[in-house]
Amino acid sequence: MAHTFKNIKVWQKAHEMVLEVYKVTNKFPHSEKYGLVSQLRRSAASVPTNIVEGYKRKSNKDFAHYLNMADSSLEETKYHLLLANDLGYLNKDNYEELTAVADEVGRMLFGFQQKLTT
Picture (cartoon, rainbow, N blue to C red):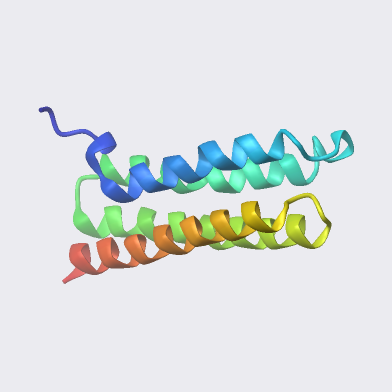
């Protein structure tokens, strides 16, 4: 099988998170279409996007830099999830599930960064 970004486990988990974010944000109030929906989708999608960008870089140092940017976008996503939960746009189960996936992606990003820089 050809090596591609799709084989990277953390990318797979981050992509899964984005798909779920899109699904749950479809149920947010229409008034949030250009507000929280847009912000949450953008920050969530930025996580796997940065992994893909880093994958094509020529050095491990550059790749690790993009993984750090992915991690920053992940933190932004976690805040948007918290805000959506506090505003009542997410039910408890959706919030806990998405937060758990985000935490797992964070652990995976950290481990991958460590592997690339040691």
